[in-house]
Length: 457
Image (cartoon, rainbow, N blue to C red; front, side):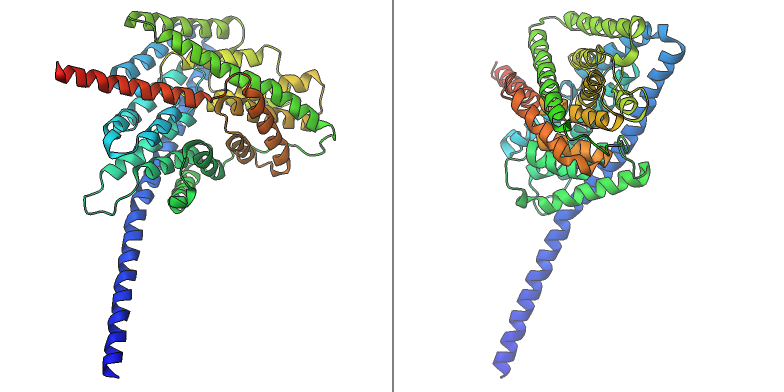
């Protein structure tokens, strides 16, 4: 009996030791995600407040001293572009393609390449450049930049871990950071999860689902605690819809999807043309030209070309001025087209949503739809245009759903997203972000080849 008892006790101690060790590893593995989520939420909130403040500055200038735009807009565009070129070239643009490239390069051999896309320097330059850009009236959003900022935070925390810490997948860390960043930026936790699955991950979500959910919950709760449990847009009325509205949703999805993918294609064409510039002064004059075109349109025609376009969305959804003029979608496409191609930091998420809202609003006016029918068509336009740009139909539908809390029209929004995704194939079989990701990977590869040649020389 003594032998049996001693054996049982030894086995029990072994299992206890194994259990404690496993628990310790699980806790240690979770701590970096918790810390990174906290930092991401705080940075996202600070960035949001600064972005809104800068955009309010633009509105003040437009309302009181509109002529100042001819000085402020070119100056801001040039400074925002110069900061990126001088200090962090891969902080330009949205930030989502850079995160996608980082996920692809997340291995020991290419770790130095990821430094080009995700770092503390990227965070500083991304925030500074985009804030200067929005102050100057640039038609950019903060959501894509927030994703690159969050990816940088998570990667930096992972790099700071001591050697004895349990190893954490760099790829999972980056993907989780990107999802947490989107969730904090839009206050859309489900959107963050769907974005990670649909856009970023090529692995099974089971490998990092706990970390993903935890990071999004922490980032979302902290952002809500500091900003309040807000909706990005609010609660538009979509009750008493007409039975025929599904057909209008399909029509809007076709138009907005083509326009969204068309805008993306034009941006890529302009970027390809700009890549042939051999001298920096050529880029300087291009940036100056974009600024002067935008400010001239704003001054002499309509200021709706300026800014992220959130005011366009709120106006069409929540005021009596529900129907956009025929030219507004054009302005909301030209603005991001010129702003993004300057090479400064700034995303296309919010501008795409505003362009889609103006398309839906315009068509609703043409058809003389009721307010509630018009609201649905505006939401469908937002989903469709964003899908045309990103080719992520479920992410687009879930984001707009969470921004407005209109679960009763989820089928309408998913229909719009799927139709838009299909029609966009006529313009380009690959998404805007995929094309940019390939471009960034080629640039990094070219840089590494130049470095090797220099060393050999």
